[in-house]
Each structure stands twice: as structure tokens, then as C-alpha cells.
Image 1 (cartoon, rainbow, N blue to C red):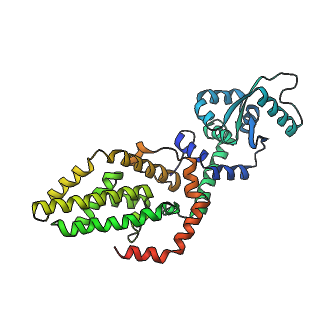
Image 2 (cartoon, rainbow, N blue to C red):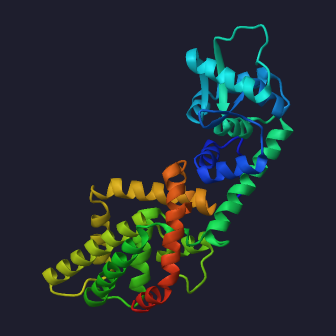
Length: 339
């Protein structure tokens, strides 16, 4: 999906929260910065020089995007910290920042804030080039971590295996309940599975398959994040019990209208609301940031992915989980075939 970093705060924050990508951008770009207190900094003048714009342009962006830039590392130094920074500047460049001028406050950009400015600046060709470098590095990094495909990046989460195995059990309870207590043909399995998907993430299975480009033999549940799997399992477990209880209460298998009434009453239970809200945020936000997939129906739930989320799916722990999944492919395949 084509991203315009100058207009999308979510896309900007997704890159800036990805510490692995920021480190790679820093290493690849080799932009000269001042090392101070174990962080890299640039002054306003250094930023304006790099982007070949007037310092007043940078000041305008600082004013217009103050909250965003401060969140991402823009600071104003004064007092002892300013004095220490000026010493670091002099050691780095062999000269004072302003010869003969006493500085009492100084705005500085750490490397993330500097990248933030590059994402905002529409007047600078150097900013445009740096934005493209950022996007390329993010894509390359994720592809490198996932072996070239993000379809199963959800399985790099340490919580996935447990949620996956639990959902398998509850899925079986649900399909058994449909088999034993619902008077419909085999189409009922697809119909009520679709109803669960639509209730949770507003998409039918066919729509989800098209978005993720799943092949016929690939299962949707293999691509779901652990929190979504947990919610699907809760739906299946609860519905199975309600279907069984209602069928036994009326003394016959339930017809299409009766089962739909049960489903609608079930999904309207108030305790689902915060769980569905959380699952939609996780699914929409992660898919946009990690899979570059946009769920139109979940647009209002998209938020920038936090740093801990990038570590969760792209960090060393994810590498270990992926290795474990590969080593146990045969076991997982047998579990799938039991369905």
C-alpha cells in the first residue's frame, strides 16, 4: 500500500516506534550527529542544512507539530544539560555553535525527531529521498524477519501457540454443537463461522481471504493474532453451550431462525464490547504496520503500533518462536488434520 508520510501520522509513528528499523536507518544513512548521553542529536541548524531549507522553515514545523516532535525526541536544553551538550558539540566539530553569543536555551533533535522532521517536510528533496529510504528499510527488515512473507507473522508471537491449540479445542466443540443440535445442511458451518468473523472483525471469511491473499488450502485461523484467536474461541465455546442448552430445552434440533436468534442475543451481551474493541485495534493496527494490509471496515480502530509490539513480532524472541514453530511443523499439521 502506497504510504504518504507527510500526511499520515499513523504511518509516521509506526516507523518511529520500530526501533529495529530506526537503528537500521541510522546505520544505512550515516548522517553525522552529535553523540551526547548515549544518544545522537542534531541542532536546528544542522537539520536545516541537511534538508537545505531555511531555519525558519524548521521553526514553522516545530510550531505546527510541537506535540508530535516532542513525543519523538525533540527537546529544549538549558542549564547544566545545555552546557554539557555545548561541550560535546565543540568536541565533535572543533568549534562552538555560536562564537561570541551566549546561549541560554537550545532546541535539539534526537535521531528519531530528526526522522520525524524528514517525514513532515514537503519542501525538501533530501527529505523526500530520506522518506523513501525509511520505507524501503522497513519493508526489507520485515521481509528479512519473515522470510519474505508476512502472512504468518502472527505466529512469531510467544502467545500464539497456546491460543492456537485452545481455539482448536473450542472450534471442535462448536462444530459438534452445530452437527448435533442444528437442523441444517453442511452449509451451516460456513454460515455461522462467517457470523463469528463478522461480529468480531466486520469481515466475512471470503473478504478476509482476499485481503490476505490466502490460497484455498490456507486457513484463516493460522493467520490470526493470539488475542483474536482467544476471542474466537470464547465465541465458539459460549455459542456451543447455548445451542446445546436451547436444543435440549425445546426438545428438538434448532432451525436456521432459532440459531440466528441465539447468535444475535449472544453477540449483544455487554461483556463482549471491550474485548471486541481490543481485538479490532490489535488486528487493524498490526496488519497495517506489519503486513501493509488495510482493513477498510476497521479504519476507525487503527492506531500506531507501540515499540513493544515491534519487539514482540520482529525481535529476538520472535526469532526463537519461529524456529520452534518450524521444528514442530509435523505436530501442528496433525492438529490441523484432526479438524
